[in-house]
Length: 387
Picture 1 (cartoon, rainbow, N blue to C red):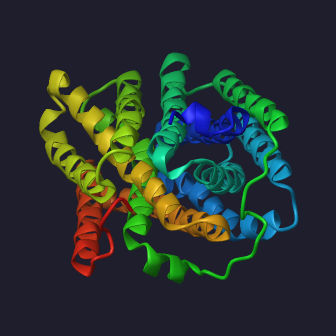
Picture 2: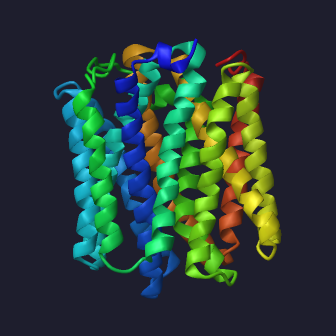
Picture 3: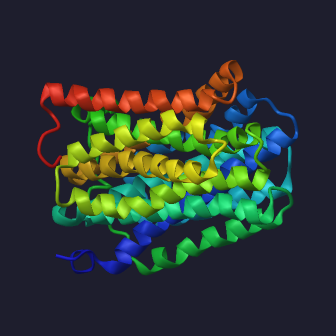
């Protein structure tokens, strides 16, 4: 059975469009803010604080989305999240005040958090078990492709001036079109379920660590990898392209991973992604002076980290259905927010203590944390089969 024959195309396009706009918003604004603050001589810890604000917004959006979804139609929530995110991006062009940027980044986090929680519930509800790996992989690939477009736009247009900000906000508004065409009816979204965050963590610890690790990775790499490149003598454009290469690896390999997930053991494939991330992180410091080897290593890093998240979503759809799936995605939104907050803050603190190689230490620790969770799940007998 093909994806096209199993899933309504307009619904899938609208759900995937929400991922596209979140990817663009985070991929463009996170390195923009870090580079502008760095050019003003701002310390890494303060850069990390500002970069963490969207993740704080995610923490707010998770319980907020659960409440709103029972009172407001999904279409209105998705339209509100899209417009709110675009407006918060556009306002970055109007001021360089640090306090205003903190507020704007927080607002963007709330808006994009609503889009992620509803979008991930929607795509998993649409997907049949036999095609879940491929459909979720398309969703995460589009997310990452747009994330990749953000730093690429930054490299092409520079990080100064209003033009790139206005372009990013305008492009984001195009997500309104498929939302107006789709029915936006999502099974279980408006039904109350009493599973708590602690209940979600007990039911699916590997999924929790997978979401946490990728959120941490996502925010830390977007924030600090350009600065890591600058510290190793790269130009701003080349340092920004490092981020692009990481997320290009994520983009290129998620659909093949989704195809494999629909045919082979999903938990085993998940573990291999953790091992790939660990290997690439260990090699990174030794390859900074050898671009011919650095670029492939960054591709592997992005592919493996993205696979940890994609397969986490696939396994969430395997484990939870209906209202419980909606609750699980809201709980995952809280976990994502925690990881996104910890990434810039902990990453900035470690870099202040250890220098730029602190970023590598963070990536290695993330890999170990995920692999430890997978080993614990095997020992407890909860990760067998395709789930």
